[in-house]
Image (cartoon, rainbow, N blue to C red; front, top):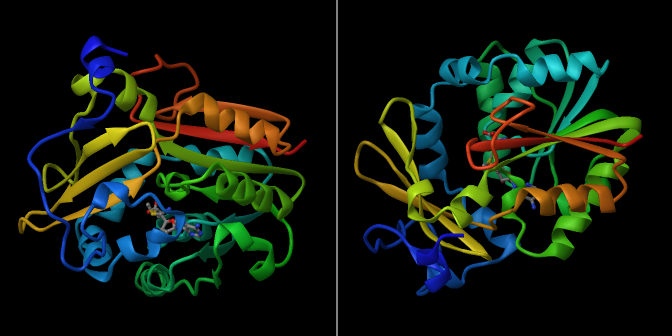
Length: 280
Ligand code: SAM
């Protein structure tokens, strides 16, 4: 941690911005640290805009075959995508021949994912509306793999919720199943001061994501679009070793972590981390 960060345990970056009227953050957005709030954050305008601009082809290219090859190398046939969102990974995996079930806690996201499945290759997604904390109530059967991608696990604000969700993921896996869960590299954002709080650009410079406020219990990101509209997400800044420990504590035997899809990396370098947790 740099001196400037120690002197100031919380950091507010950039100008003060009010939340988008469509998003309900109330009078003090920095106090919104609630697992249940995710459905109010992924409002229609945000989701539509994101999906319109983040070209799926470009996302395919930047991600390459990392997840597909990883799943195939483990002999995975059935996959439960627990954070389907607008369906990017579900569609990708269906196209690669995986028997894929698509779950999410947001009905709007599932509707968009279903529409995208039809539009990108006429795939009829098998969708299940389920919150991770009660996943086994709504999802039946066992899977070779569970995927929780796109920095989704960060939406859980209490340790109790994180443990509950991981236990539910563990329970829907076959005895030798794997969980693949990714996250932003929050250690770099929390520890390295302002320098690491860079703006992440998507789709050229058209969409930007930047941390507007960060402390140990909240990372509030601002997303700006070419029409000058902006939306926010309040997330819990997961530290890498904390997530690895939780994964082991809920029963996963082995946890391997990749940084920007590489197995060896300098701690503060990657933007994204991917954890692969094995049940046996
Ligand atoms: N994986 C997709 C991607 O990479 O484009 C979507 C990622 S989006 C950042 C996070 C998704 O997680 C949202 O669709 C949200 O509804 C879902 N989500 C967040 N918390 C959840 C919870 N407790 N239970 C179920 N789904 C949740």
